[in-house]
Image (cartoon, rainbow, N blue to C red; front, side):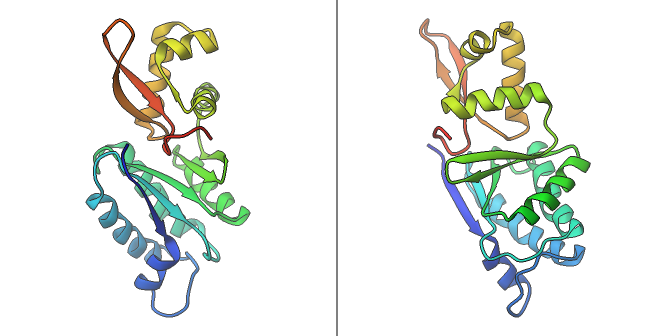
Length: 194
């Protein structure tokens, strides 16, 4: 199983912004935080899930969230960092609201994990959300199983799973089916049922 790396945002802010300042505000601070996170993501191994922990972070404004999260998610989706993933945790309702607005405006989506629950911030079509929900409930899913579970044509199930993988909301791994043919399994970012 690939690594899951948690980055405490407060530690990044402390290094990038002098003093005891734990707010993510202004585009300039966002650019500085983005560069630091981008370096960490670039150094991570293939398949790594980066979880950004918001514990002890104060305010976050639109411009800073846009500089950090919209840019990171977009670049991950464009495969600029290789096969890596991003999820968030420890967000306050204020954090969620501002990041959701940024993701929605940029037509992006990011997962938030909180203990045994999850949610999507941003823009995700209902049919993809339904598919993601099935994967999150089961922990992993193949096209034939999804096809049967949601009463979909096999090619429709396959396309939905590929789209979620391209959005970096699930991980895709090669497997072999019962007939010995190569196939793919799509699983949660944390590798467990949520």
